[in-house]
Length: 135
Image (cartoon, rainbow, N blue to C red; front, side):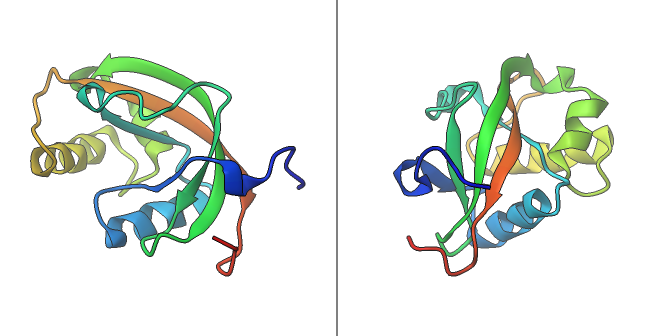
């Protein structure tokens, strides 16, 4: 697929909070299992908006995929539903495992509360960039 804009001009970042998690989450995206993500509202929008394209990096900072935001909403941690947890694509894809792993993630990254507000983003994979993609 040919992009209308060069991916090198897009914002880019890895998922997660370290190289190992970035690689794990990227693998889920490339396999088509992960089509959603979330983060604490206190972190701001991070430049996200519906229709925006961006590049997901692997744990070594290499560009690996072009994604496009298709939905962006706010909801409380304890109001995330099973469908969103499934679309996050992690672990066994249940709401229970989503809540457990995200509580751990938010606790180690500045704080967790059951009523904390999240940005919940759905995205689609536009293009897979080869491991040797120009940076």
